[in-house]
Length: 135
Ligand code: FES
Image (cartoon, rainbow, N blue to C red; front, top):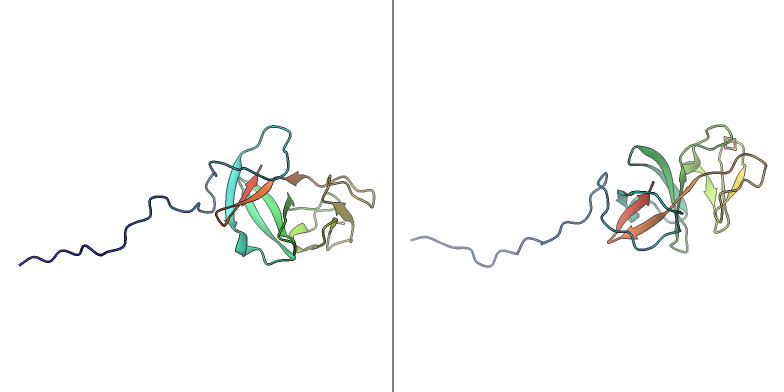
């Protein structure tokens, strides 16, 4: 006598995005002014509220921050002043402060308030729990 198992859970029809794979659609995030390819770099939960983490998006090193208000920001990983690790910087709603020499960069436009070159900003969004950075 054969036994069939008909109450097994159905396999999901769509898998969640995986880190390192291009995302198919990004519906929010700051304007890029044109070109850019969205990449899933990890999960939003990989970045604790109020902190930053470093990721690679399509071969580009980026620093992603999740502010305590839930907003996301992404920059180049290395500080334009002298290469400091921006993911280790302190941030609030207005600025990101590099941990090496404490230069501050505005989230609004990337400009440095201390006279260094601006930091490059990247669009970042949450998509079904995945962290999507467009580079
Ligand atoms: S390396 Fe970032 S402020 Fe100097």
